[in-house]
Amino acid sequence: MDSTTAQVTHRLGELSAEFSGWRIGRGGSGHWWAVRGNELVRTRNVDELRARLHELTSSGAPGQG
Image 1 (cartoon, helix red, strand yellow):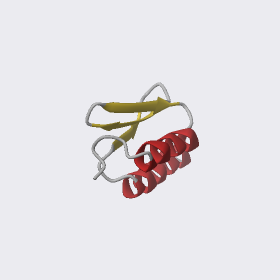
Image 2 (cartoon, helix red, strand yellow; image 1 turned 90 degrees about the vertical axis):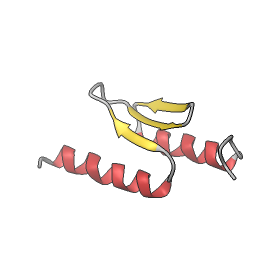
Image 3 (tube, rainbow, N blue to C red; image 1 turned 60 degrees about the vertical axis):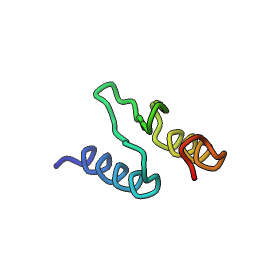
Image 4 (cartoon, rainbow, N blue to C red; image 1 turned 30 degrees about the horizontal axis):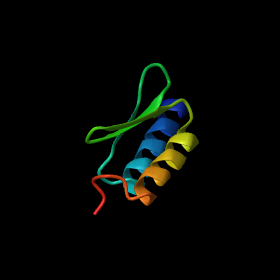
């Protein structure tokens, strides 16, 4: 496994543990994405993805209970 693949795998594990209920991945175009129900977050930067997911989960978005 090359270092980029290892880094992506590590980040996916971190994000999945931090944001249960979200399906998280990285597409071939380099975009990171997260899906939960009808909600989709897509960005090129993993740190921006994390920040946006924090905003959604702390704002009491639908599906939070």
